[in-house]
Amino acid sequence: MGQTLAEKLLSLHAGHPVVAGEYTLARVDWVLMQDGTGPLAVRQFNALGRGSLALAERTIVFLDHAAPSPGRALSNDHVFLREFCRKHGAVLSDVGDGVCHQIMAERYVSPGDLLVGADSHTCTGGAFCAFATGMGSTDIAVAMTLGKTWFRVPESIRVNLQGSLPRSVTAKDAILFLIGQLGADGATYQALEFGGEAIERLGMEERLTISNMVVEAGAKCGLFPSDEVTRRYLEDRGRGNTFQPIAPDKDADYVREILLDLSSLNPQIACPHTVDNVSQITQGNVLGTPIQQVVIGTCTNGRLSDFMQAAKILKGRKRHPGTRLLIVPSSRRVLKDMVANGILETFIDAGATVVTPGCGPCVGVHAGVLGDGERCLSTQNRNFRGRMGNPKGEIYLASPLTAAATAVEGRIADPRAYL
Image (cartoon, rainbow, N blue to C red; front, side, top):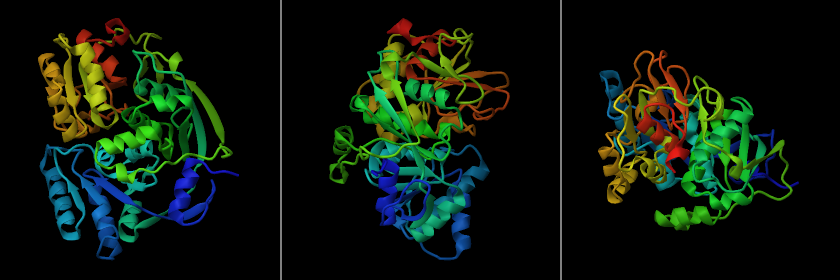
């Protein structure tokens, strides 16, 4: 029997063939933590008493969730994490550099890697055909100490993509639709493996969006094969030497196969307060819902292609006077690229506020906390009650195109009217 991508990647790091359902010890290539989960992981590492990092130059600490820090306690956490990096030789990605998942994509993670992170959206790295997954802070402490950790090899759901995305539909709409079909626990501790004839038409930034959100269906990871799209992305960033082609075997065994026709999709929206509460934007009473804040960016849709989509709608237009528009680049590089091609000016002219590269409002500790009764439409990955800092607020999730149209109208709007 052939192997799925998850089985291949874990076999590579276990040093022997593994199959779904088996427990194995696997070598780790990269470890990440951020300023929300990092302090606990460091304290757990200290409690283990081993004294040094197994992978110092491959342990990366990101100050991205509270960036810049909005309060004394969080500032002290930053001091604590900076000192940890100085003492142990870990890599520090400081305030303003960007979101951990985007920086990993730009600089570090490559096909065939095994990445663990103290952040649930570490699964973003699966777009490179890397086994990338989030773990608890104690597990991350063990990985930092030993350079390896244990896994139960996940079963895999194969998602066969066909067709092409319509002009008004994005990868965000595709993954929202899939999560709506699977449900919030429909892929619990399983790998979502994406394939089919359509993947060659999905760029790396679109794949990153899809892999980022698989955890919202409970998945352990979201894997794409490593192909020419992967190679071009790595070469463009000076990392072409890390490319290797990886694909599943044709006779791999899957617990389920799903056919998703991209050409049949319409703009999607996830309504409060769960990510799987998804419908087409024209269904129900969603259209016309007043929105007080729109967020475009974060680790899900904060890349250059996302902002270019939104800029198509916002060019020459203004945000609605009753709606705040926040722009959150996912990295310093993305921000520089936005300046270079002029779209940052488009957002500024539209009345947007540009937030420091990082997580921004998504985490709910600074930069865009909602007021009581306010509604936000965001391109982020979660809309749980209280996610943006106020349990009395409401969060809708949608694509950058839908977000831009909504910012113009001040209410949930169909982007097809502008394209």
